[in-house]
Structures are given as C-alpha cells and as structure tokens.
Image (tube, rainbow, N blue to C red):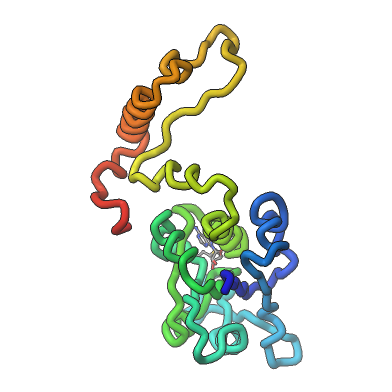
Length: 233
Ligand code: SAH
C-alpha cells in the first residue's frame, strides 16, 4: 500500500503545487504516493460558511473553529484510519530527518493546515493532533509547511529516488552535515578541485569527506555533535 496524504486546507489550489513536478510529481503519477485535499470550508454549517471566529478573551486576529475543523478531520480520517494526524504549527516539535523517515515508513498522514492566529485548542486535544513545526519563523499558513513535510517524506518512499545510496549519505542521516561537492570543470576562476577527489583512492576520499563533514558540522551546527545517536531523533 502506498503512502496516502490527506491535506485539510482553505486553499486546496496550493496542492500539489511544487509536488506536482520533478521527483515528487513523477512519483505521484506513478502512484508511489497519493494526495487528496479537503476544503475545510465545506464543513461549515452556517449561512456564511464561516470557519473562524474572534478569539475568546479578546485580542487580534481570528481563530479556526473546533467544530468545523473536527468535522473535516472526521471526514478525511474516519474511525479506524491509522495514519498520524498532524497540525502544522510553529508551536510544534521541530521536524527532523528521523521523524520524516518514520512518516515515510508509515501508511501516510492527515495534515491540517492552520490559517489566521491558529486553531481552537480543543480540536488539537480531542482529535489528538501532533503539532509539527518546520522552523522558528512564522508563515502565513500551514500549506507551505505541509508541502515541505511531504517533499521530505516522498523522496524517501521506495522507488522514488533513483540512487538510493545518495539518500543515506545526506546531511543529518549520519548526524553530520554533508561534505562539500565538486564537479567539472577541473579549474574554476583559479580554484581547482581538491586533489584527493581526483586521486581515485576511494578510502582516502571517504576519509576526506568524513573529515570535512565533521569540520563543517563543528563550525555551523555544533548542536548536532552533541545530540547522541541519530537513530533516536
Ligand atoms: N499565532 C500563531 C501563528 C499563526 S501562523 C503563533 O504565534 O504561534 C498561521 C498558521 O501558519 C499556523 O496555524 C500554522 O498552521 C502555520 N505555520 C506558521 N508558521 C509555521 C511553522 N514555522 N511551522 C509550521 N506551520 C506554521
């Protein structure tokens, strides 16, 4: 069974968006994964089809209603649906490559895209939504975050990436950032490719890459060096 994504959004036209092209787009056409969108507004019941209301306690902005969102979630993921239910949210746990890998090994995901100030806390609790952040900055809506999450997951699905090995050497998979890359021409604006890379000595090349990866990680992301076993993240 292939990975099934259901996205709940006020802007279904944003999907598949970038995921309709290139690697993810071809995988979608092949059926390596599937994507359905649900217009949250279709689950409003009042005359104006409203999905949001003013925040209890006052303050700026609007909040997405728990009842409307709950109906949309129950429709997209009826009882017995084992897929994780996610809410894209800057308050969520930051997304990691390890969590992405877990999603890719699972049956799919039901993804709620927030808008306005956010969603009523009660729907997060009653529908057991896992809040996921894609970084410490604020987007105008959850849709680009859902596209980011799905992009990261889809490329790991069986058969999607041509060269499976390249995925395993990538940044974060080993707990380190990746080494620098070079390709032709041999000489570019007075800079040559490091000699070891053209030596043909594979053991030396591997050692050079490991060393560069450690150096880069220490300079740019020392936090990664102290995280322990990458498989536990
Ligand atoms: N008032 C909220 C921000 C709302 S932004 C706060 O201060 O926490 C509107 C919507 O965009 C959110 O409901 C969420 O779905 C999405 N969003 C914004 N930033 C995000 C991020 N860093 N990661 C994931 N989703 C995000």
